[in-house]
Length: 103
Image (cartoon, rainbow, N blue to C red):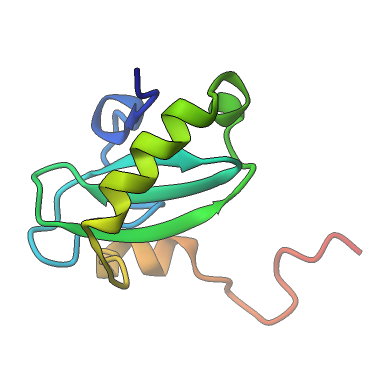
């Protein structure tokens, strides 16, 4: 059984923080391989991109069988750079080089 995160239901405001499919701009589905989180197109475009490592605890509740299944799926996908909506890039971008540094 795969423990996949459906980002469309997870992110109710449908922002693209984790990126969208660069081909159809669909919300991603996340799949874990150990602690690495991979995004794939929810509409089946056959693309993937990494989101990060150990950001979500879901991987800790999976086992080798789940990771093997996710790896097999990811091997069928090609690596891409995710799409980010221009209006949201402006929202998340730092205003100055020092913004966000707490010290």
